[in-house]
Length: 394
Image 1: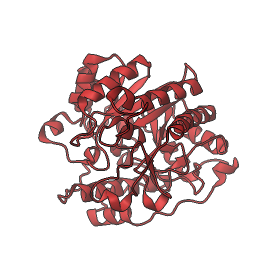
Image 2: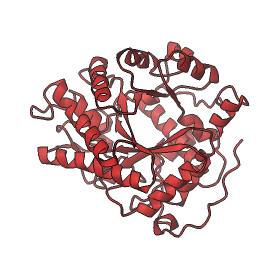
Image 3: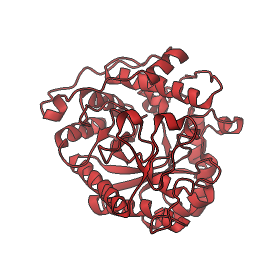
Image 4: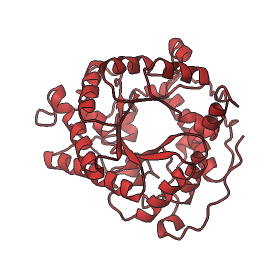
């Protein structure tokens, strides 16, 4: 769901604003953006929004205003990719330790350089500055991305954090980076602004971040009084967040519901669960179990931008059945899925309806073909007058 629509300087533009004007009318109560990078030297993908300071304040304000125009709250998801910084968009990468991605990841991502202690402190400061700039621009809160193998997740995992200093060596020191970021963000935005965290249940890798360690992190986050915990799982090496669910998961819909139930028994922090929900019955059951407090919808909103409103009205009982049959190779299937949904997001941002008929080959091509990054637009110059016509959605 990373939009990849920012201009070449990392600023929001007309396309991103159009996309969020549509999602603002979706019926959702909370919109969480895709990746907002805290350092322009380390981006997860071309087209990511980058916020290091207030240089794009007007464009950020226009983006926040568009997202809130339908009455929803909007939080910005802030992130640093660490070693998951693609070669074609970065001049190298950094990580807790110099551990490269395995397998095919070596082709897309360079071997990272281990961060020095002073650099770690500087990145912690960046998260705080980025959060403060976004809230100043009108965002209602921020979500710290600590999942999916990005930098914070790399610090949490013994597989990628092999340090033996103040930032690694045992579970307490491995989670210090995340907790320092939470504290710095809270200091930057103040006590009344929402701060959430997206956390892996596990990395699903031998020797990686385990569920037991994750539970200890959850308890530490509750002690920091975060406002919302989103649970997920997987990394770019084990892309569980893109994988086909098991039969038992399909029956309950949500990918990580069992983990959420375990978390609920440990903490009282509100829990957001995203991934797998398709029917109103499945969402009602998850909420009724008290395991979660918030239902997250991601991919369904790329093909049915008004789905939450129709579910709430009773005009729909489930999301459209959009399913690209898997080829059988997990990485290839993940690329096809990403290409399919990235295309839908770009269509909505261009004022077009989603195209559910897009096939596997076309989706793979859209993933592999370089996407043009928009040039700086009127939103960044503060000269935006009116919005492009919103798409007609089914």
